[in-house]
Image 1 (cartoon, rainbow, N blue to C red):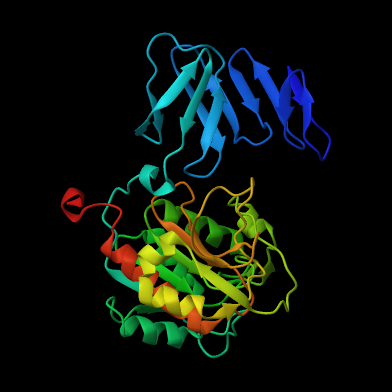
Image 2: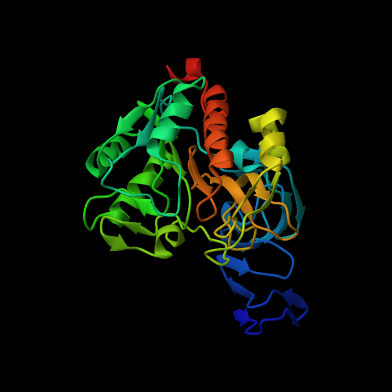
Length: 342
């Protein structure tokens, strides 16, 4: 059976409060629903063994209907991590753990090198004003030391394919321009996803990430293919006050957090906190009510990070120190203990 709300407003059907354009679906081995005010889900299986996929942020409470009431005691795991759940017949209610607590651990310890892409004076930036040399200088002056420099799209592809065992983090200073071989933008995006899945860190530094690359206009399909939504706003929207989240303050430290909150930057291609969001960790957000997040990271189902800076021509005084401080934090809080990785 399949019940759909085709209205833009929530509607109660057969006692179920459906979200706008929400639904319920049921078969002998499957259940799915998008109810008003609740995370959406799809579950599949039997009374002895079932699995579910939930559209929610870490920390949210989900009610998941299973195809059949579990037989006997119930043990629930989220990506291998045990999670407490309440059972009422064929329905489980559980609080989803934080994203960082459930990501799959990488097979190898990430390497020690950070890299900055620098394609030379003949290639301009796209909706970013922080030059590759500025990132190189900031990293060199940091605890991380001088980075490697990747000089071509071919070299970027090679490092991505090698995985993070050597170069564990890559900064793309070119804004919404993805360095890729001609006609190979989507293949390069796939490499970035695989790199993140294996524990690597990739930084997108302004504009609409993955919008162009290799002479192609990928458009919204670049981030859309990764399941990541993008906020809107006028291209020439004015800079606005910023807020450092509690996570951001813990990662960046009080001194940098205070400096960031005293500055402004455009937040016009931000990181929305919406039902379409696969979940992200926000460090800096727009200070206005309902504003999108400005700097945050996605796990893409792996143990690494895809970081975005969500604005056209973001303030260099904000983004440069935040990028470096975030990498310093990640270097000091590795995804896998060194001893365990040997």
